Amino acid sequence: MATRAKRARRSGGRQAGAPAGSLGPCVALRRPSTAVEAPRASSQVARGAGGSEHDPDPVAGFLSWCGRVGLQLSPKVAVSRQGTVAGYGMVARESVQPGELLFAVPRAALLSPQTCSIGGLLEQEQDALQSQSGWVPLLLALLHELQAPASRWSPYFALWPELGRLEHPMFWPEEERRRLLQGTGVPEAVDKDLANIRSEYYAIVLPFMEAHPDLFGPSVRSLELYRQLVALVMAYSFQEPLEEEEEEKEPNSPLMVPGADILNHLANHNANLEYSADYLRMVATRSIPKGHEIFNTYGQMANWQLIHMYGFVEPYPDNTDDTADIQMVTVREAALQGVKGEAERLLLLERWDFLCKLEMVGEEGAFVIGREMVLTEEELTTTLKTYATDLKTEQDILSNKVAYAKLSWREQQALQVRYGQKMILHQLLVLTS
Image (cartoon, rainbow, N blue to C red; front, side):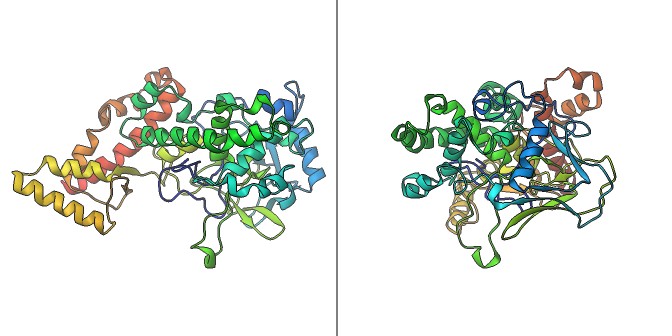
């Protein structure tokens, strides 16, 4: 459900999108070290499909399943809760060298609209399941498999997070979301996501489930469950990249990759997913010492994107891909505040309209500012005023361990998003002063 133009993952990453409109292809969910671990026990629906609530060892069940489906795991790595930044992760049991294979997932083990148990029906009805997001077939596949008594993927579902405890901002109360993330672009992106999810569910998904009551029981006919699965797909699914000669084609549909979605994310990652005809392979990209966690990357993701799509952030200044995304209309309003007289105002609006016709700016566009892009001092100052708090207030909290510890997990995550963006803007402000 991402709103930014560039949302697809790199070849090794997950997807990064969302359903309908702002939703797009996806990626994988994990929280870096500052995050409070969210329980990964299966949701009630998932338990009905796979491991029970009292499953003594979901990891053992998953590893046994890997053997049955041909998922090859290197003896040098282990799936574990210990030694990982959050939830389940993968750690090195022995030192790993660059280029070494960590695991290989056969395509037959992937969970997609083509491999699920209702794949034939989804293909037959594909025209009726078209949507802006392109996610409906996968979401219907998940809705069916989760409540199927003998789903092939039940041991895989046992490692999923509890759907009711996902920390994406779309699940925060609206007041809290706006108060904590004002100025970051996240509240506006979430509003679009929620509207698109609701529209897609009632226009396409629910009618399809009602037309096939033998395949979709009452327990999965729920807008709330659908919203939770959208967040899960947003955070955990992968999108296979197009070949260079296919760049003009529509992006590939998302799919679930057991094993690969266990890896947590870091901008400074040490593994990457490679695609081939028969297998998806996770390969080490640098040396990994014994006992260290293995990290994938979800792409070059700013913190506002990470919190929006995955429910976590990388604390400042660890995320080298962080940006401050300024809405183009905000820049226009900042420029209008500095005009002198009606003639100058009309001239500025004419220039704006001209740039709109050239498709260089637009009502829905944003300037993505990293460490090299510079706007005027007035525009930067005005943009900083869109945030609810000033930089010094947040610096004081971050430097005070006692005060920081008193914040809720959501307040800490939102603070990291705001502070990273403001630091980028303040550094630019210094350069232009």
